[in-house]
Figure 1 (cartoon, helix red, strand yellow):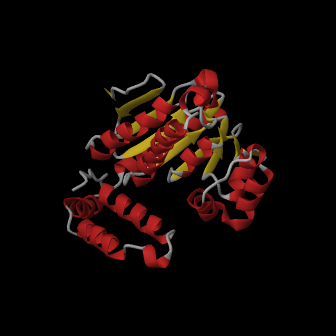
Figure 2 (figure 1 turned 90 degrees about the horizontal axis):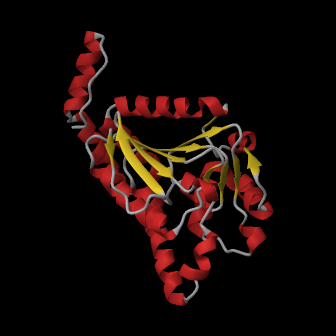
Length: 267
């Protein structure tokens, strides 16, 4: 296991068996994200993005109460009070969200307990969301008078469609894991005691597959969610071509013929 050095103890990161793990570690505040946590996320993602020992990344919350319950509002008076402070804080959250969304490797959110507000935004950055049956989801912006930008709303709408997106934003209510699954907000809902084993099984299955193929598929799907005039289809074509020219493609063919598990190297 490889442990990462992180700027704050409220974020933990390690690598094990091809999986990079990110833990939001402020359970006493239901893993609400503080400024130093926002600032640590791009550093962790940068390491995982360039590391050969990471094939897939999993995010989770510490403890049994929450994945992430939003931003740590308790520090707003001190750290998000003046225009200058707001600019610094907003830059940190933007950089964090951009880092999560720019990761070319698969990203899984393992969700237990509260996943609300900023926690929903973090979960939406993942490619797959696996939830325990006790999870709760919601965006309480309408109960706080907070405006929500187009990009965040469009991201949710891409997942659940316009009708459910309106229900989530108009009501500001919390929704059960069963509701989230029905909406398409999460991929799987499992009993609490099966959450980690299910997430690990997904992560290791993906980690064992051909990395270039998985990355090309992620890139193509992400381009498909953009407006047609914003899609970079030439980039996707080059990624697909790289798959066919790779050593992994040769290994996949040999393994199939030899009836054995392939050993992909990502090149």
